[in-house]
Image (cartoon, rainbow, N blue to C red; front, side):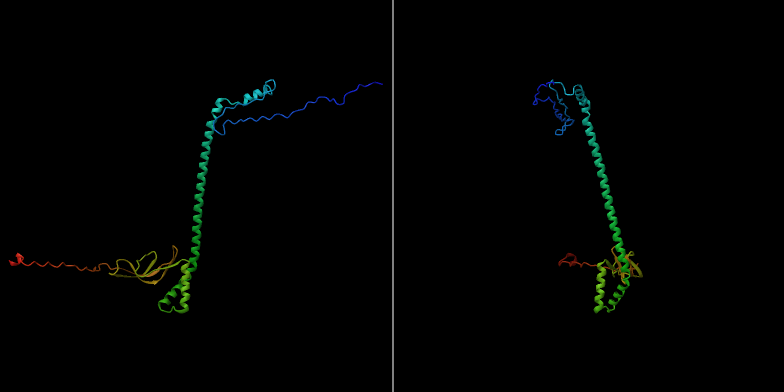
Amino acid sequence: MTDQGPHDNNTSADTEQSGEPRVVVRDRRRIDPETGQVKTVTEEVPVDEAGAPEGGRHAASEEHTDAAPPEVEAEIVPDIVSEEVSLKEQLEERTRDLQRLQAEYANYRKRVDRDRESVVTGAKAAVINELLAVLDDLERAAAHGDLTGAFKAVADKLTATLQRVGLEPFGHENEAFDPSVHEAVQHDTSPDVQGPTVTAVLRRGYRIGERTLRPALVAVTDHEPGAPAAKAQEWVEPAEEKADGDPADRN
């Protein structure tokens, strides 16, 4: 039987505890965000207990690689200026595009509104054209004194309604003749007028907005050529009475 020596149960073998790697934050920005100046990058390399850089030769070579030469740092500012100029040019180009787009949209809105108004005016004109004969009958009845009582009330309401939607009559006596809205069916001359004048309205004309529904039929009187003009009376200054005792009278 072999004796076994006693051993201490409270003693355990030394174990190596692995620590977490240390995190090192390095600021690699070339431009100081507060001052806007180019700053010199100085990177602090962690060292071990012996004073050597951690990682040995590899860490030293990495630090040497990260450091930018002076000529490269000097080129950073011109690059930033060039990039700023490029951004300004792009901004101006986008602004011009936006202004052009807004102008095109404004023109489109105006064109749509104009077309819509033209369609509405055309629809009104189509309906009112059918009622012009009724208005002529009402005007003739009023001229003969037959437009009275309830008949007159209905006629007034119809006329007021048509005027509210934009109907406008034209063609009145003693107004200047306008061939764009008047149609002359009678012509006469007289020394009492200075130019072509409407002396009688045979049929009223109507317009709605800028659109003429029908011209007015009128009689036109023009100035009679060679007619003697009215003579103005001449005022004769009375002769002054001669003073008494004038030597000419005594002679």
